Length: 588
Image 1 (spheres, rainbow, N blue to C red):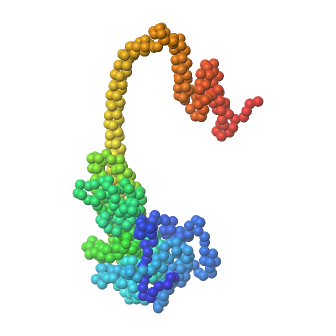
Image 2 (image 1 turned 120 degrees about the vertical axis):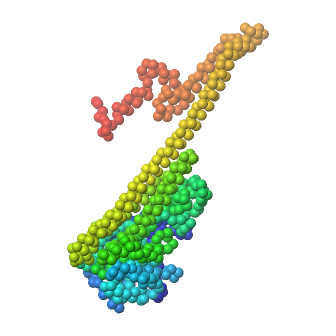
Image 3 (image 1 turned 90 degrees about the horizontal axis):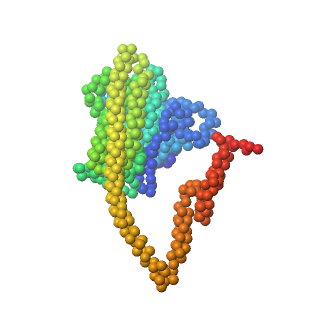
């Protein structure tokens, strides 16, 4: 573990983000490595070409260490190795957890926003924020406060803002959290899994998903823009009627991880929901991870306030009072993602309508490029929406083992309400999927409209060019007719103007001399012109020099008698060509 100043916590670098140092900041969210998403993968963060740690392979220590009672201890300093020995230093480094632990910044202080649901299902009024600027006090807050709460606490929700390295280790060691939760959160890997299942005791559930949200364009999301890094806002391709700032979608890279700018002056950006739920009979804990505030994502204070406000809902308060299952609190987190999805697709629908209007009033081919970029993003959004649906289904079918000793009537009621609420979420997702499919069809319709419009314009231009060519042809015909009218007279004038003895007695030239000179020159001209235009006489793919082409009269005579040398060579080559890769045998 890296050295650090006492009492100063180390903020986490948003490791799922690629940073371009030359451009001085964040450029884009990296595509997630899905193979490292869940503990079912037996080799965490070990790729095909990575070596295996030989020291760990030959270790005699038990693969599952004994649990620490957390009484006057500092066992958290060795996390994750202390609880999960199979996570070697190389794996911890590759998963970005080591960077999160060792990175140091005095300017950013980690804060833990907390809320409590008591045994009556009511949110207590003592919700607040704990400033984690001292290791000992933070460890006491996580260990002793939980123990002192007793059975009166049903759910304890922790919203970690700017998670520091020590807080990451404390949470992992205190609640025995699989490192996959932190690695998936740091690398923005969508995942969902259940682990540490104990009948009549509880389990752990991890849900990490990427969802879509809409936000104003004048935010930090521009730092994640997919457009050229040399200009945050450049040229103009689409302009709306309200005078909003110019857009330049044509110059964007087709990068589905980057924000998508809309004509309404808003951005569609990717957001992260990362939640770890420890389900118990009492004292369940929900931990939500939030990336650094430099990213345009849901912040810990915002979600903390939203979840507390959900406790004021009469509908949800009745559920919380009637059921001891903490999974219902988790459903409110999923509703936050659903709200964001719905609003984002509404804004995207408005943008598509705007593009349809633009296509009707303009014929620029650049709009087609814009549509291709939007459709690439739209296809990515469809896959994210499908992943969101699978997350809801996972929560619905993953029963809480802590409720197994409840009366059957209460278990049936919990199952019925859980099924009802998850079906409500799924029906909303299906509505969004249908809306997304409709938008995709409209995008294709707009693209077809653009191509049709361009084709119609091209056809009109070709018609105009044809008409112009016809007019030029008529003029040329008139000139040709006039030339033919004067051609006989010109010929007669030329003949009688010849300086020969038959017309001018004092001259020395004669008509036979004229013919003897003009006729060979005419034949030579015809010979050379025919040789230069002899591509129809010789094979098209033959590279015959010009001096050989001068022998075209000989070639015509040979063809007249059926002895074309080029045709014979082609027939011989076809006879010797292999059949299905097997050369033919020569006959003897």
